[in-house]
Amino acid sequence: MAVSGLFLLGFVVAHLAGNLCIFGGQDLLNSYAQHLEDLEPLLWVARVVLLMLVVLHITTAVQLTLENRKARPVPYHKKENAQTTYAARTMAMSGVIVLAYIVYHLLHFTFKVTHPAISHGIDPHGHRDVYAMVVLSFRDPRVALFYVFAMALLSLHLSHGFKSLFQSLGFNNEKLEPKLAAAARALALLIFIGYSSIPLSVLLGFVKPAGGL
Image 1 (cartoon, rainbow, N blue to C red):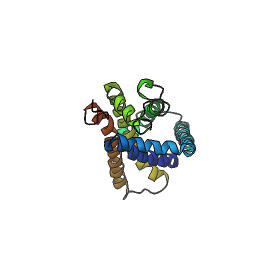
Image 2: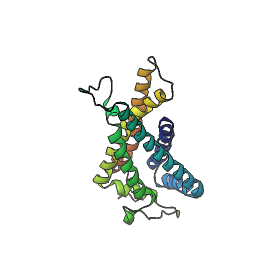
Image 3: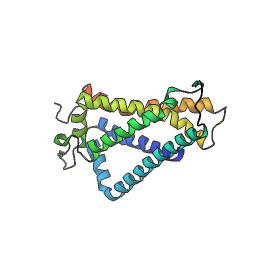
Image 4: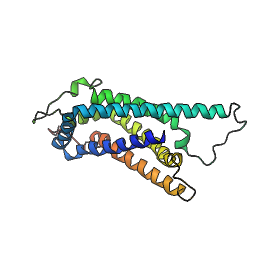
């Protein structure tokens, strides 16, 4: 679970870097998207690998949960969550909701199923107008706020997962524990700010359609 989570974290960071191209305007974001589409065969290989990593991550999480329950078939008479965090206690819940978000995100921006009326535009250079699709989508407060909520849960998930993966891989100790915890919180916060800045900037009118309307 730690190894698959590490690779998925790498994708989250790389994906954010590409998404932030929206602040460079229509040409930059659409050019970036076109470069990805030009690598279509490799892009589908990457998607399949990512899907496998997600399935592996979920499968190992379920297996670990079942093993933990099997190791203690009789529940605690009184269970206290000492020396743990809210992020740690809600990993399963946040993971399930993030999975639902991933499905919606793919249907929205990759397969263009959920918002077909604004998902098939072409820009003046003949590229698929991803910029317009993103901006028009996030002008709907329901869509924008759902993405912000999903990013909050993703960041919560990462704040515990990033720290835990070092322990799972044997690179943690009492001296490193507080530093890794602080690094995990900082990374999760930066990812939340980065992703949430896009829908919020559109919703608040800082990022507008290419025509400025």
